[in-house]
Length: 223
Image 1 (cartoon, rainbow, N blue to C red):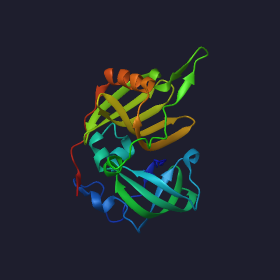
Image 2: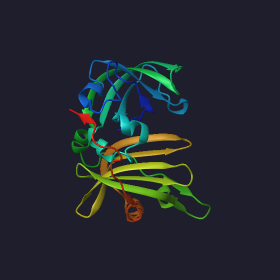
Image 3: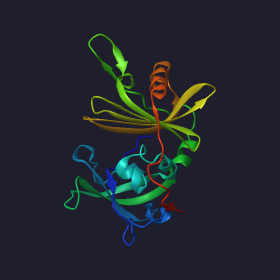
Image 4: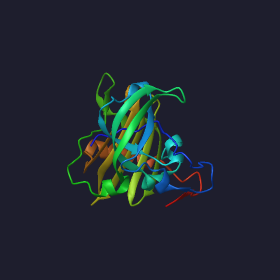
C-alpha cells in the first residue's frame, strides 16, 4: 500500500500547541472533517485524488520519529480526498485541502497486514563494477523498539534518508513499512514480507553500528 508523508499538517483551531499537555484525539483529523496538509513542489499531489496519508504527532512531524520514537505508536494513516491544491502563502510548500474519509492507528494497520503483501523493495545503486543496496552506503543509523516492532532509521552521505519498521519472526526480519527519501523524491510503502537475504544482511549490519534512540522530550500527549 502506497502512502504519502506530508511535510506538515495544519493546526487545529482552538488548540494551544504550546500547552504542557495536548489531547491526541483532538488533533488527529477525524473522519468527515476537513483539514489541510503541506507538501513540497516535488511531492505535490493532484486535486481530485484519494490518497493514504501519514499523520505524525507534532514533535515527530517537525523532527522525525528518530527524535521521538514513541510517537510511532501514536501515528495514524488517513484516507483523504484531495479537494484542492494551491501554492501556500502562509508557509513553505503547496497547501492541499483535504476531506478525511477514514483514519486508523498506524500500529493497528501494521498488525492487520497479511503475509506477502509487501510490494516495496530496497533501492540499489551501481558503482561501475557491481550493484549494491543503498543500505550498504549508510553513514549513520539509529534504532528503537516501539510497540513490539523494530524501528530503523539510516542516512547516507548522499542525502538519502531511510526508515524501516520491521519485526523478527523465527530469526528472520519481516518488513512492514518503508520510507525512502533522496534528492529525487520520496517513496512510502506499507506491506508485510520477509526481507531478502541481501536486504537482511544490509539491515543487520546497519543495526550493529546503530545508536539507540530515545525520546528527546517528555510525554505531552493525552488521550
